[in-house]
Structure formats: C-alpha cells, structure tokens
Image (cartoon, rainbow, N blue to C red; front, side, top):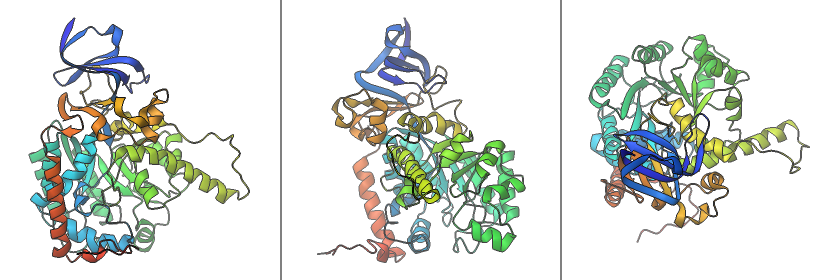
Length: 480
C-alpha cells in the first residue's frame, strides 16, 4: 500500500479523455496532486484521511470563465432598469467609488457564492480604475478564499463608453497591469491585460493591448460583440461586417483570444472562430435573465470551438450560482432553437419526437474540463487525473432530495440546480481544504454579509443612486 494525504470515495466523475466514471471509486491526493483515480476495489493507497463513501459524489472543481466580482455591491439591481440606466446610473458610480477595502468587501460575498458551491477557479474582468488599487481588493478576496483566478485588467479610453475617471491612458493601464502581475501572480493567480470590447478604445490601442498579451503569453479577454459594436464599427470605422470578422481582418483573432457572450453573430463567424482557434465564454444565465431568446451555443460546439460557461457579474447573475448557469445553458439553447424554428417556419409544431439539444453531461463537461480548456488551464485542472492538481469537490447527496433516487445522477445535479451548499462536504484547491460541510474554513460568511450590506447603504447615498433601488417595483415599500 502507498501512503497519501487524503482519499476521497464515492461516485467519481473523472472528466478524463474517456469520461471514465466510477460508481464506486476513489481519488488519492498527495502534496496537492492527484496520485490515483479508479475503482475502489483497485485502490492501493492508504490515506492519512479518508472521506466520503456511499452516497457521495466526487467531481473536479468547477470553472467559471467570466465574471465581474466587484459588482457585489450592486447585486441584482439590474432588475427593472434599462442598460443605460444601470450602466451610467449606478454601475459606474457605485463600483467606481470602491477603493481597495471596499472592493474587497464588495467582491467577497459573490466569491463565497462560488466556492461554497464548488467553483475552484474563476475568471474576472475588472475595469474599475478610479482607485487604481480597487483590483487589488478583489485579488485579496480571491486569495483569502483560496481560489484560482485568471484576472483581466480592462483598459478603457473611449469617452462615449466610459465616464471620466474610468478612462485612462494606455501606458498607464499597461504599467498598472505590470504592477499587478508582479505583485499578485502565483500558483493560484494569473494576470492579463484586456479591454471591454473593440469599441471601448481606438483600433491602435486595441491592437497594442492584444500585442501585450501575446508578448506575455497571456489570454486576451474581450466582450464580443459588445452592445455598441454594430453601430460604432459602421459609424466610426466604416466596417459593416461582424466583430469577429474585424478582429480577424486586423490579425488579432487567434488561440489566445477568449470572447465573452458572443451572441448574434454573422453567418460564418462561428466557423471563423474555430479556424482561428479562439475560445468562447458562454454566459447563458445572463442571456436568459435578460430575455435574449436567440442564445446559441450549438453553432460553436458544432464547429468545434472550445467553450466554457461563465456568470457575468452579480448585477445580472443574481445568485452568482454556476449550477444555475449550467441548467440555463441547456434551457436557453432549447428555447433559442424553438424560437429560430418558429421564425423560419411558423407552421412547425411540436410533435414529441424531437431530440432536444445537449445533455446534462455536456453541461457538466463545459463547467469542468471545458472551462479549464477555455482558460488554457487544462494541463493542471478540469479533470480528475493522475498528475493534475487536486482541485476536487466532494458532494454528500444523502440529505439532498433533488438528488434522490440516483439513477439519473448527473441530470438531477444539473436540472436540480446542483447540490445545496450544505451538501458540499469538501472543496479542495491544490489539495488544500477551503470549504468543509458548506462553510469556508477561514472566512466568516455572516460578517461578510454584514459588511456588504453596510457598504451598499453607504454607496447608494454617496453617489446618489438610491432612486434605482426597487426601480419600477409594483410593491408599496414602507420604511417605518
């Protein structure tokens, strides 16, 4: 028998190349690495600690490929507002008022949402730079939670898309990115430079930021197409084709590009993305919440594009729950398919013989090994394989009614919006336990909530944004 630090037992969903899943399996961990995976009867390890067993599920840590964590202070406030009302009315003002300490407080609750439900890796796009160290507050919260993070510092310069204070000189933005990279990069965190979208800075600046990512072997993370692309590309650049076609024309679209949302593409752009090797961060929960019925992931997957699933920010990803996004990935696609079918043929009727898009297994793949590939981290995480880092989630389903009976185990996980936080028996990042029995091992969840509540109250008055609270609510709110 070989010795190891920890053995996890249960139904093991490995997400390896052959998608081996062991109804009675084990995972052995030593010094932060996975040293054994297989059927329980073949385990030749003796652990200092053995956890799990009957009624438990072992999966790789989940990967969130898109987010804006500093938005914790405006969680859910998008409801009942237009895009411009929330962007200029409270989004920019409230997040812009967050210095390093406030950004820590603002981002901690959504981080706890993620890690307490099994997300061990998150991407983050940060563009609140009135206080240059606002991003440091977010990174500190990620560090204290013990998560992995691919942090993108977004540089904005266009006066029509960003107010005073949010715009900055390109050299300043890149110098700050270099500072953050030097101060924060480690085994858990990588830092890159990006911008929100192709119309948030000049074409030359856009290309220079992209070139920085190439020179530094980093991802270039961009929202494409962003809301104003169609109008600005035509009016300012005389470009009447799509955002991805523009990036390809400029020589930018390539393997280091990951594009978030990526909906309403022109015909052929999905194939172009595949040909160029770029990746896509799908954001189905946000698309569905905002009523965007034309959500389409099928075109990317059919073209062989590497895709992961992300949440966006808490202002629109209300519960900040990746399990909800996995269900939304399937339901949004199926609703979109039905919408497109009806638009094409109004007489087409449901017969009951149709095979619906996708499967629960596909959704779980995109949240694990798919997300790892989308962030170029699949050499370390995303699957339970010997030699990979031990980013592992142990689920105790014995008290979870939505996960019983277990014949349809993965469909129950996905369509039941995942396990409750209390059922998360263990979350490990590089073999270190960060969550046990639903609670973070070092962070005080109740204190994080109290500080978050206080911060929002302060910011609402400080930037005169209280008028957006419960905007257009039909209820009669009484403040006694």
